[in-house]
Image 1 (tube, rainbow, N blue to C red):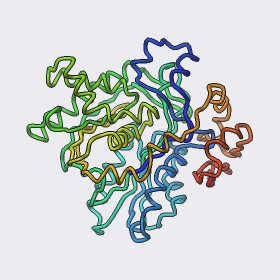
Image 2: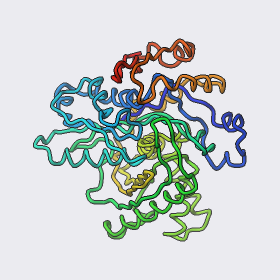
Image 3: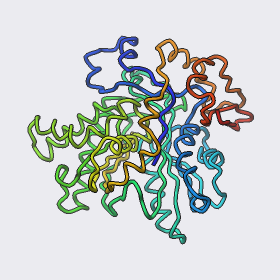
Image 4: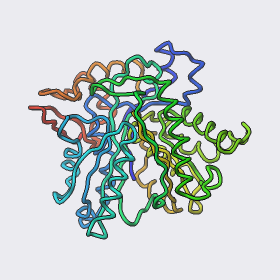
Length: 403
């Protein structure tokens, strides 16, 4: 597993103050920073930049064993052509390979993972692998001012195979719950809309129901005793803390101090990176898992409880085991160092970048990804660093280059 968390960030407190938002709600958000994509970045560049370290570390034989590239995203760039085709091309993978994207809001990454598991399990090749990438690029948010401070940028790539090195999933251990609800939507590629209160209620209901279903499939499962750690889809860390509190009140009837201790011990390690990156949509759960690997204690094998949610809605509670070697394997991709090296955007710089956001929007027939309007920021973040960036669009065909 590897991740890309953007090359720039803005301070969330500064953004709160600039927008005139209620500072009494700032602490509840539990956000410190939000990663920001530059105008010549999109879901494709986020996906490729997340996956490239994984692919580059493979031998030729291992690379040829990748039989599927599956991108979970709600930031598709075409009604027909999946962004996985661009990802497949710029990662220089073999042509004996499936390529497609899946969509269900923030559940898309987990949907892609589940699909990959089935393809790998039914392949004639015992060494078959699938490359799963959860990648998004946030659009404008309408009517929900408190969403802007929490919306981040980035992607997580997962290499799925029969011999997992990071997370060994528990077979058959998954609780499911889905129903139709209009909590959030993206009616246009550049627009997000919805009802934030309804979204929170749907998230809480789905967590409750998926874990109850998990208990019917895993006899004796207990939210405290069964799992050494928890990692949930994280729109913002404060929302996860509230969901954790409600679940433990309902299932264990614990007192407030005991719930807080449990949160600090088993849940907080998964929230350190999301608090610095923001909501990464389809990658939201997996970015929490990245955080857990870098902040948890894995001196022995640990069972992790994972909760995935996507608006609209679909949800799943599942589990797996992380071995002691996993943090070092993940640590080789240096997400912590990547976050520390991001460029701190001033508020004027952050707002200036938004003027060029239409350069990478879906539906553009022809255009140049001209960086001259934000040349100083580009030089400070992407120039010369070998990341994929948008180069231009001709006849709706997007062309990319390495920075």
